Amino acid sequence: PDVALLVDGVTGSGKTEVYLTAIERVLAQGRSACVLVPEISLTAQTVGRFRSRFGDAVAVFHSRLSAGERLDQWDMVRSGAARVVVGARSALFCPLADLGLIVIDEEHEQSYKQGSSPRYHAREVAAKLAQLNGCALVLGSATPSAEALARCETGSHDGARWTRVEMPERPGTACLPEVIVADLRREFVSGSRSIFSKPLLDALDEVVEKRQKAVLLHNRRGFASFLMCRECGCVPTCKHCSTALTYHERTHTLECHTCASSYRVRPYPEYGSACPKCGSRYLAKMGLGTQQVEDALRALLPEDVAVIRMDADSTRTKGAHQKLLEQFDAAECAVLLGTQMIAKGLDFPEVTLVGVINADYALKMPDFRAGERAFDLLEQVAGRAGRGEDPGRVIIQTYLPDEPVIRAVKTHDRSVFTEHDLDMRREALYPPYVRLANVLVWGRDERAARGLVTRIAEELRAEFGLDATPMLHPVVETGSAGVEFSSRELLSRPQILGPTPCVIERAKDRYRFHIIVKAPLGCDLSGALSAAVSRAGARPGGSIAGDVDAYDLM
Image 1 (cartoon, rainbow, N blue to C red):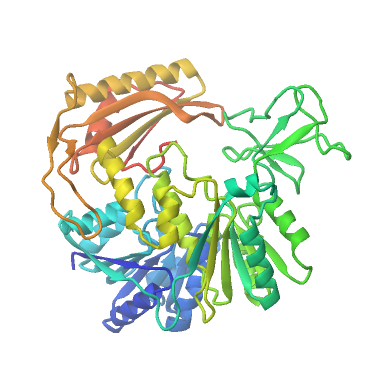
Image 2: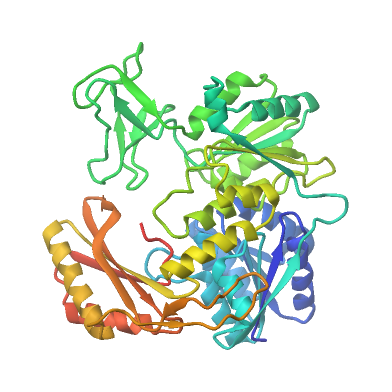
C-alpha cells in the first residue's frame, strides 16, 4: 500500500511479463487489477496477451467501443465476471471491486493527460486510487517522464513512496539494436534527392532479400504538409483556423488537422491542382506526408512486399487498427509505415529494421517538452527492431545529427539527453522543478476574448500578490540516480506569463489567448485559478479553461 513502483526497462526487456506475473498474484489473493495503455492501436495486441493468460476475466475499455459494447464490458466488471480491466485512461473509472493493482504502461505518454473537461492526468488519478484502495501502483516505460524520475529521486510524493527499478537488458540472446544516423546534409551535398538515404535504401534491399519485415516511422500524415503556388506564393489555409491545409493525394483534398475541415481542390490532370487565389496550375507540394512515402515505397519495392500504412487516415473505421496489424503479422515480407501510433507497444519478432524518415519534425516545436517527446518517440520506435532471434538495426535520417536527442538514441544512453534537458528546464523554471498551469480563453470576438484574458491575468497577479519581481531561492544539491538537482535557483512564489495569443491563434473560428502560471511545487493552483476567474467575471461569448499541470501549451 502507498507504494508507486517505476519499472524503468529498455524496450523488449520484459516489462509486460512483470505486469502479468504481478496480476496473477493479485488475482490469487481474490483482488482485481487495472491496466492502462496509451493508444487504442495497442489495445488489441495487449488484450490478446492478457486474455491468453487470464481468459475471459479480461474486460476492455477504449473510445472506439460502441455504447452497447461499453455497457457489456461495464456489466462484466460490475458483476465480478471480469477482474482485469485493460484500456485507455478512462478505464480507471471502471467499478472494479477490491482493487489490488494499477499498472500504467508507457507512463510517459502524453495521451494519459485528458485535454478536455474534466481535465486530469491518469498518473495522478491512479496514484490517488491506489492510496484509497491500499494497493500498489506500477508504472512502466523505457523512457520515463521527467516527473516520474524526479519523484523517484525524492523518494516520496503526496504521501506515497516512489521507487525506481531498472531492467537494463533484454532477456536471452536478444540485444538492443544498432542505431545508424544518416546525415541528410551529406546526402543532399552528394546529389541525392530521394526520400530514402543510401543506408536506408541498402537496409530495405537486405530486408527484401532475407524476406524479413521493417517498420518505418514518419510522423506526418497526408501527402504533403502544404501546397504553395509557384506564381503568387499563396499557401491555402483553413477558413476557420490559422493553420495551413495538408494536401491528401488519395482524396484530392486539402484538410485541416485542427478542425477537420476538408476542401476540394480543382483538378487539372496534367498538373494536379489549381491555386485558390490566382487559379495558377502550378502548385508545389511542400513537405512530406505518409501517403507520399507510401507511394515511394511501392515504386521502390517488389510487388510481393506488402506496404501497410497506419495513420489517422487509414484507421478511421472501427477495427482498422487490428486489421492492419494482423495483415502485417500474416505477411511473409512487409513494411509497416506509420505515424507515432506504430512506435510503441508493438511486438513483432520478425522486424529487423526500423527506419525514421525524418527525425527533425518534433525537435523544434515551441514547447519545452519537445525534446522529451522526440526522444521518447525515437527510442520507442527503435525498440521495435531486434525483438526476435535476428539482430535489429535502426536508421535515423536527420539534418541535426549533433542534437542531444539524436546522440542519446544512437548510443542508447538516456543521460546524454536528460542532463541537457533538465539543465534547460531548471534554468527556465519548468516541470519537474515547478508546477505549471495554462489558462486558455477563446471566443468569436477577438477584442472581447483579449479583454477577458487581460482581466484574468490581473486577477491572478492580485491573487498571488505579485506586485514585485518573483523571488527565487536556492535548492540544496541532493545527488542523483537519474535526475540531478544542483544548487540552482527555483521559484518560491508564483510567476505569471502573458497573456499572449496561442501558437495556433485561431481555431474553429475562435480567437485563442492564454496565460501560463508557474508556481512552486505543492502550491494550490486550482483554488487560485478558480478565485481569479470568478472575480474576472466571464461574459457571454467568451470561454475559459484552466488546465493545472498542463501538457498542451499550443
